[in-house]
Structures are given as structure tokens and as C-alpha cells.
Amino acid sequence: MSEIDLRSDTVTKPSDEMREAMATAPVGDDVYAEDPTINRLQELAAELLGFEAGLFVPSGTMGNQVAIWSHTEAGEEVILEGDSHIYIYELATMSAFSGVMPRTIKTDDGVLPVEEVKNSIHPDKYYLPDTGLIALENSHNNQGGRVYPFEEMRELLDYARSVNIPVHLDGARVFNASDASGVPVDELVDGFDSVMFCLSKGLGAPVGSVLVGSEEFIENALVGRKRFGGGMRQAGIIAAAGVYALENNVERLAEDHENARRLAEALKKMGFMITPEPTETNIFFANTTEIGVDAEELAGELKEDGIVIGPRDKENIRFVTHLDVNEEDIDVTIDAIESYLTS
Ligand SMILES: Cc1ncc(COP(=O)(O)O)c(C=O)c1O
Image (cartoon, rainbow, N blue to C red):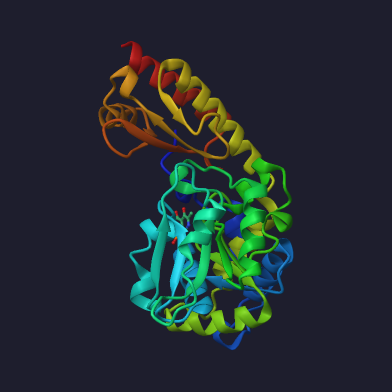
């Protein structure tokens, strides 16, 4: 039996059909814009999200950072949430490579209050930095896959437009957010100036993300991608996995959400504290404080049964479902945790 890996949706392996699509993909030199498979992926992504153009990038981090580089000037500030991926997990790259400063707003739910955003923008004085960009995250990784509330997002986008500040979406899991909220993905991202989404998470491709925006923005981002070392050659071989993922693996994200919900509900009955409650997408946190279980010890025991989980410390575990975890795997996991608790 293969391992049941619930640490992240980045652990998926390409299916035989995806590998076949990769092996047979037509390719060319993408620095000359001559890779037909990359061109197709970029067009498909732009069309799906309702933007003029797309750019294939090797990772979500590069997509976010190229977007920041493209939207801003050195010396500006970027407003973003204090637990966002861009702020926590991208190695201060916006400061290192783009010369901009993060201005974070700490929240309990990943949602930026519009009033606080307004207060974070300095008056127009020569001795105060300009705000070059606002960045949101949907779904929010560190908030257990929470979906950004639609109305609050629209209010923020309208405000940003009124003061002429661009807004970028870290939509690594925007297709999860779309499924969970029931809002078609192009409506969900309408009004953003750029969106990055990942092919290599719930969509199951081995590599890659796509950045979408206006033609002018993508022309600039192309320069940024080259500067960041992301100019690729016959990378249609990996873009083919992205095309396959967009054509075959979007609708099934609902199964991951159902699996996460069922697992979370079972853990709740066992005494774990679940966040968010109820779960919204394919990610949730389980806290063991009330049942007095050492999360790291539990992880060690489950590993022996071929179940891999990701404790963050002794009391908190992040669970993530994805296309390599099926309904039966969820049953096996529930049984294994139950028998650990009762043994
Ligand atoms: C919300 C979010 N944004 C961006 C990224 C970065 O993606 P990558 O690992 O491809 O650089 C991740 C990765 O986990 C993520 O969760």
C-alpha cells in the first residue's frame, strides 16, 4: 500500500495520463516564445481567469515576486496580511530583489479590514513612502485554507481602484476558493490587477504556476521573470502537465474539500479542536491540547502505519487533502487515529 500523505497538496505525483501528456507535448524555445505548449497553457490560464495574458513561471513564489517587481518601484510599501505566504515564507524577497518594504496588517482571519488598509496608506508627503501594491491571499494557507469573503474583497478592490493602487492576488489555491465559495473563478478574481495561481498544488502538476494580468503587465513581468532566472527553454514538457491539470483536475477539487470536511468532523468527535470550523477547503488545523496528545508522537506512530501527517509543534497539526488521497484513505486515517487514542 502506498503512503497516505496528508502534509500538503504539494506532494501529489503526476498520474500516468499526465505523464503521457508531458511525454508527447510539442516543445520549442520559450525564451523565443516558440514553445507551443507553454503558449497554450498561458492562453488557457488567461482565458479561464478572464485576463488578457498569462506567464508560466517555475513556482508560486516566483510568480508572486515577479508580480511585486512588476507593479512597484524601489522605496515603496506593499500592504499585505501578517500571516500571508508572501510575507512569511518568501524570504523577504520583495525587499531583497524589488527594494520594497512590507507593511503588514495582522488579522485573526486573513481578511484585511478596509479601514486599516486606508490607515496604512500615508498622506501624500515627500518624506513618507508611497504604497505601490496591496496583496491578498485566497484561499489563505496559514488560516487553514479560509476563503476570502467576497463582499469584503470587492470593497477593498473598489477602494484600491479609487486611490489608484494595484492589487495582486496570491491565488496559489484560487480554484479551491472558487469551488468552496461557488463563485466562478473569473468572477472571483475580477478587479485584481494580477493573479498568481499554482499548478503544482491541488491541481496535481509536478511544477509550475501561472501569473495573469493585462498584456502590458505581462510584458513587464516577462522581463522580471528573466531577471529572476526564470526564463525557460523547452519547458512545454512541464507546461503540458499544467494544461492537463486545468482540463482535468479542477472540478474534482470538490472531492478534496469533502474529504477534508469528513476527516475534520471525525477528529472533532475525538476531541481535537479544529480551525477553521467548519473547514472551508482542503486545509485545516487540528489542535490536541484538550485531549492531551503529543502531536509529534502521534505523527511518529501513524508513520509506522504508512500515514504521514505534518505536526507544526507538539499540539498543532496541519492536515491537507489532495488528489492522491481518496475516500478510503480518509477512512484508514480516521481508524488509525482512533485506535491510537483508545490504545
Ligand atoms: C498561498 C501560497 N502562495 C504561494 C506559495 C508558493 O508556491 P511555491 O511553493 O510553488 O513557491 C504557496 C506554497 O505553498 C502558498 O501556499
